[in-house]
Length: 178
Image 1 (spheres, one colour):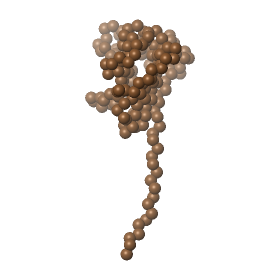
Image 2: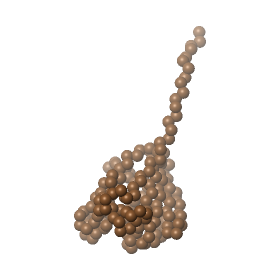
Image 3: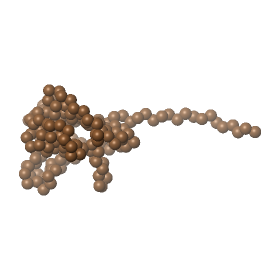
Image 4: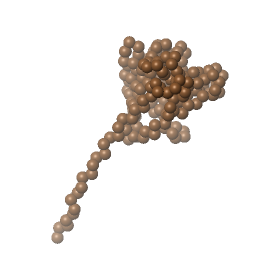
């Protein structure tokens, strides 16, 4: 006799995770304080990271990173967020005011030792570089906007998107690595 099986139940398809966006404008933080929710590392030798009203892209505040001579580590001071975002798409946008001779590194890392790096860029001596390759010249003493988007975990494709908005609105777009 034929075997009768119960009707199959449909399994709902899991929707994709929402895009993760970190938003921090520093407007709600007291002047002179470090960024909320971030880990901040300074040596206390004239270096610092704190909310300032010296310059602002909009509103009245921004985050000021102050370098100093004689620091034990060339990468100090620095700060980082730990969003613990493990799948989906992460999008980060920020603006930078570059002083002459500024040296800024922006890098996504996981929490492993040794760590694995994701999107990474360097702003140094008026140059924007990724993986040692110059992508653009960057003017000093003006705001430059950056946008980075990358899949995380199973959404990772091995590439990421970078947008750079220069003064007067000139937009540069890159898919990296090329």
